[in-house]
Amino acid sequence: MQLVFSDAQFWEDFLPLTFTRPVAEMRCGILTFSERWQKLLAISEVSYLTEDYLQEKFRKPEDKESLLIVPNFLPSETVLQQIKDLKPGEALVYDNELLAAKINMKDFSLHQIEKMTDVHEQLVVFKQPTDLFSFNEKAIDFDFELLTKGRNSAELSGTNGFLGEAQDLFIEEGASIEFSTLNTKTGKIYIGKNAEVMEGCNLRGPIVLCEESKFNLGAKIYGATTIGPHCKVGGEVNNIVIFGYSNKGHDGFVGNSVIGEWCNIGADTNSSNLKNNYASVKLWNYTKKRFIDTGLQFAGLIMGDHSKSAINTQFNTGTVVGVAANIFKSGFPPNLIESFSWGGMKGDEKFKLEKAYEVAELAMARRKVAFTEVDRNMLKYIYLEY
Image 1 (cartoon, rainbow, N blue to C red):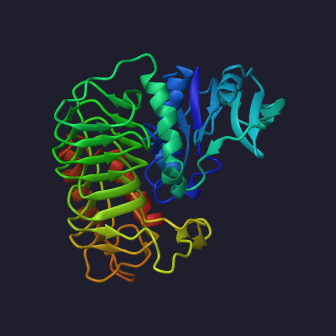
Image 2: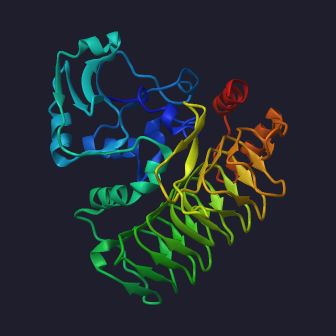
Image 3: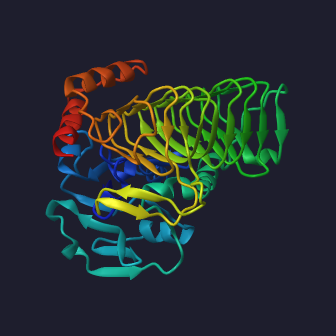
C-alpha cells in the first residue's frame, strides 16, 4: 500500500516553514508527521502531493491504489482504526476537511469517493506555525507512548539529579547525560540515540532531544520543547520546536518559537515572546499578505530553513523570517524578514544566490549531508518566485 501525504489544504498556511518541505516533513513532538504516520500504519512506501517545485525532492505518488492522508493531526485510537478500515472509495472528514481516503492515484480525483464519514470526536489539528509549539506537549505525549511502549529505557547516570516518575523519562541507546538535573514532574523527557546532555544542564519537561543532538554546558530548557536531530542548543529556551540540523549553541533566550533546518542563531541572540503591554501577538501571514492576530499572548520567532542571525541579534515579539536570510545589522529587525534578505532590514538587498548556495553547501557538509542539484533548484525557485 502506498501512503500519500496531501498538502492541499494547509501548505500555504505553514509558510515560511513549508517553502522547503511538504507539511508531512515538519516536526512536532518527537517525530515528523510523516514518520508518525508510517509507524502508526506500518507503511514504509511514502509519497507526496505537494507544490510542483518540491516534487523534484519529494517523491510523487505512483498510479495505484493508495491511502491518502492529510498528515497534520494526531489521531485517536478510534480514528486510527477507521483509517485502517477504509475501503476503496471511502473517506473520513473532520470539520468539513478531508482527513483520509482510499483512492486510486491513477485517476486522482475526489470524485472517486463514494462514501464520506464524519469524525465527531475532538482531534488535535495543526493549522498554522504557532500550533507546532502550542500543541507540542500533546504531540510529545503521543509520540512518547508510541515509541517507548514495551521498551526499557537506558539507565540515568548517578551523577545526575532527577525529580519525577521514572516511567516519564526515556533514554535511548548511546545517549550521554552527566551532572545535570532532569524534572519530569511537569512533563515527559525523551533523550534520543547518541544525544548528549552536557554538564550543568537543567531540563524541565516536557522535552525531546533527538538523535545526535546536544544540550551545551549549563543550558536551561523549559518545556514543551523539541530539539530535532543533529542540533546544538545552549542558553535558555522555552517551548520551542527546532526541526533539525540547526544550532542555537550559545547564551540568549528563545521562547515560543519554531526554527527550521540549517539555521544558526548567533551568540546572545534573543527573541522576545511577550509584548510589553501583554497584548496578543500578530504574525505575518503569507496567504493573506498581512499581519494576523494569533490570539496568543506568547509567540516569538518563526524561522525558515537556512537563515542565520549574527551575535547580539534582538528579535521583536512575533517575528517571521523567510528562507536563507542573513540577519546582521544593528537595531531591532522588523517583524517580517524576507527570504534571502542580506542584512535583515526592510529594503535591504538580496543575498546573492550563488553565495546562498555556497553557505548552504558548507553548512550541510558540516553534518555530512550533500547539497544537491535538487536543493539548488529548490532555493532558486524560492528566490525567483517569492
